[in-house]
Structures are given as C-alpha cells and as structure tokens.
Image (tube, rainbow, N blue to C red; front, side, top):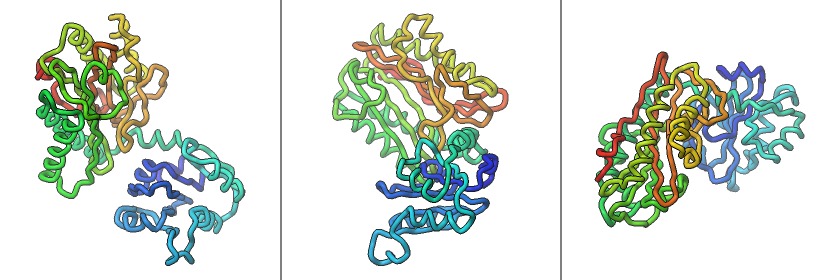
Length: 367
C-alpha cells in the first residue's frame, strides 16, 4: 500500500478513475459499469467488467484481477460488481473500517458496505496529497507533455486566417500534434483537449466549446490546449489577435500579462496556494478590473487536467517542491473580449521551472 499505510486503515476501496490509474496503471472507459481497486494490506484486487479485461491485463501493475460478466458465457464466475467486492472483502475479519473516496462513493455503495458491517472513512484528502507532489518520472512525463502542448498551440496559431472555423483550428493543431508525437515518441499513449473560441462575444465564455463560428478580421481568439502523455497533462492557453488588438483589448491583455508575471514571481515551496491568486488579483484590483476575473488563478495538474492544489483566494494548501501547477490569469470583459494566458510550471527547491514557452507578447500573437 506504500504511503497509503499512513491512513492507518487496512482496507481501502478506490473507485475514482484517476486514482485507480495512479495506484495501478489502469486507465479505462467502461460506460457506467462499476470498477474498483480494493487494497487490503499489501494485496490489491482490481474488480472490472469483462469488457475491460484485455486492457487491464496489458496495463495493470501489482494487482490481481477479479472479473464480472455481462454474457451467458462466464456468468457462473459472477455477474455483479458487488458480489465480487464482497468475495474479496470477506475472507478476513468482516466489518470494521474501510477507506473510501467520499466524493466518489454512491449511496448504493455506502448501503452495500454498511450491510457487510463496514463503516466508511474518507481518505480522499490523503490521496490528493499523495498525487500533488510528483515523483521524478512523473515530472519528466509532464515536461514532455509541455513540449507537445507548446507545439500544438504553435501549429494551431499558424493555421489561423479569416474564414477558418474554431473546429478547423482545433483540427489543424491536433493533426500536427499526432504527426509530431508519432515521429518522435511512437507508441506513446497520447490524449488532448482543444478549445478555440473566436470574437468578443464568445471569448468571454471560459468554459464553452469549439463551434463552426468562423474567424473574422479584427477578432480576438482564445486557444486552450492540453496534451496528455502516458496519462500526464500539461496546459498552455494563448490569445491571438487577427489584425491586431484595439486599444481596450490591448489594455486588458497587458494587464493579464502583468498578472501572469506577478503570479509566477511568488511561486516557490512554502507559500500558500492563495498567495498566488492574491498576487494575480492585486494587479486587477489596482487597475479597477477585478470584477472581470471570474475564476481561480490556477490549480495543480498531472493525471488530472485540474487537481490539487487549487490556486484560489481561500485555499490554504501549501505549495511544495515537485508540484506541477497551471497558472492561468484571465479577464473576461463583455463587449471587449476574453483574455487568458496559461502556462504549466514545476515547483522546485528555491524556485520554479516554466515548461511551456509559447510566446506571450502582443506582437508575437498578432497575425
């Protein structure tokens, strides 16, 4: 159980997809079928549907497989996740405490565990703490993801011209990314997230989606990109101006760049996550535009696209060496546009390493 032993709980049930990957190497999409990693002492059992067995055999490390079936062939081996879970739990002393992820456990799960005599204890905070500080191999993988997300952004930017749609910009960047990864890291487990929004109306929507809306002269554009390499993410977001920004757009984007510098300046081990957000918001407050900053200033990144620690005004999480963070100052001004500049940074003893380096300046981002 490695550092999970520090919880003092002998039985632990993991159901969150990211935590299962972190602890076992198993990544999956099973469309609503229950999956769980049961850890008892130094023994781990991954309970999965038959449809996921092949993937599990190829990727799982240090865990036995327990398979339930959805077909007549094999039904005698078990057709229920709960039956498999009970069988794995009950050879030892029944009842007692079992560690679970409180944000993931369903009411049905809770009733089932209670019926077996178990009382649940939340270990989610411990899991988040474990994942927040990365091992050297994890950081190396995030660095590779950082290089590729830079490449994705640059190729996306190069594709922009009047008349191209948001979705087409995404597609050009993704196609170039696929070719580059295949050329230099063939066989890599590659994933990505691409979002492009165009124009003053759509760029003020932080969490929208790419559409068929086409690029027009004088449009601002926001490109949000994440690349996943072997399960680990890096992010880079940029604003681009077709024909150049107007005076208002230049003013607000310049403030975002100033806030970006202020946030990066304070990052080091030993500070609180809220101090990064404070440094960024102080730039906006001095300029009288803080009402246009509508979300936190970043988060951790790794297996999760966003994970602990969260760089929000009320976060008391401690920033520690070997954390990977995304710093994402932004302003969203109705009628003018949305402006954000996101980079991925690794916290190091005595400082930081910014691993995304796509140009940020207005001149470089004016097409």
